[in-house]
Length: 480
Image (spheres, helix red, strand yellow):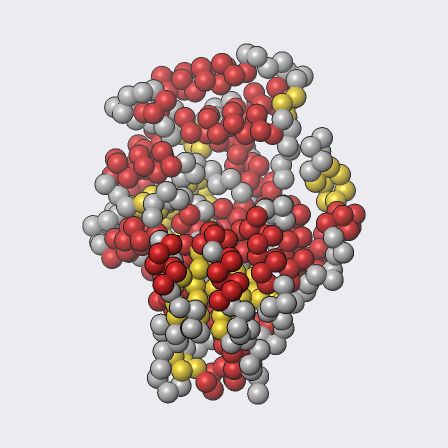
């Protein structure tokens, strides 16, 4: 009997698994360490649940710990409530969340315990103590949180799962090839002896800060990344999914607004010689300031009556859509707040508590009068589901920073269940660094797509070119 058939002999699911999902269950369930790299919308949660239930049935685990971003705890609880034993009983599910006093009162006597990554780290001593009495299988959802092997997230998780079965879930593409090392080390630890071995095999050159900037042997890296793992894209398994049409919309800033942009830029650049190099930290700070001023004229101009033309563009798109809904993606909290303020719209970004995020999402999904929602590409790119049933249009008021931000956020609407073509609008303010940001996004995508970087230092002349728009005519390719 296959793992898929064995699980269905003991449990009922609210839908039938698709062939590619059955393949993933049958391949990964018997393995101790696995990676499930299905693109957003392809059922990672359901497949990983089936794999975990197989472990329970076979006695390889007595319970399951699911570590997720806080926003996803409620969604996991709702999902698991739909999975039943064959006799009709529900799974015993404990959301391990809330203030410390509440968490101390929660029992680990359950089939599934759900914890946010920060709570997991904060309460690790107690979690270790509570999970020593029986074997626990671990699921790490949105596993990109551990891709930096120097981070605390990686070290806490690596140490906890040592000697335990576990599964990494992520549909997010790699931002740069070196991100793959963390996944390989956790899922197929024999592939590389250590980070030095990985760099010897795959790093062609490093920059002046000793960070990889050129790579080699990407075919071998792809092979190792997929050891004990399943990777599927929407194109692989959803041939009937309507296309996503990506268009750039260029617009001009108000002359007074652009003068303020240039003033801020030149204040920094007058001190920088054309042949002088500045490090990534300095460049990043400058780019962030100039990236915000494009959509936040009201803030930098210290007058809330000032209106960036991005909001005029958003209003034009809303008018064009009639009664259809629109998602506005922005990188910066102040931009999201301004969208909410101007249009009395709900919003989802990092500073909003998880319960309020869920209320805001439900308002967008359920209220026909709610035409618009403001979202951060990362905060709303993790587990937000349902938008594909009510929305086909998105606009990026600020260009996504990485390919993963683009893929995750766009997959809120371009995923299974979408029946209509999706229109993606990338807004680009002429004469600003947004033009170069779109170009860098395309370059990074070209690098990491085959295995599922930009410069780390720039000269003064290069920075000026980026700040004032670079070269027009870049083309963005989006394989979704």
